[in-house]
Image 1 (cartoon, one colour):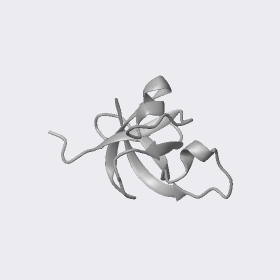
Image 2 (image 1 turned 30 degrees about the vertical axis):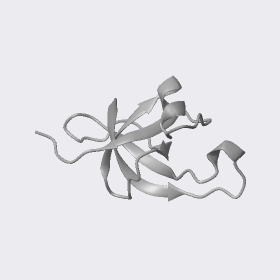
Image 3 (image 1 turned 135 degrees about the vertical axis):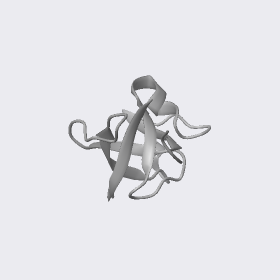
Length: 86
């Protein structure tokens, strides 16, 4: 799992029907010290995160399973909200 911060929302006029009702966000990947790593990516939200929050996310096959009881066409998905970092 990786850390990231939600920096925006993504709206689609047309998308795969499996994405109906799935929130898509723009996420800035972060390292363990919350420094920016690379370019922003698009992620599917599986936990009800909001803009500005620090989250942890997965990519590849795991991302397709971030929405309970559904398999979605996604390369990255949010699977948790960070409460604090010690």
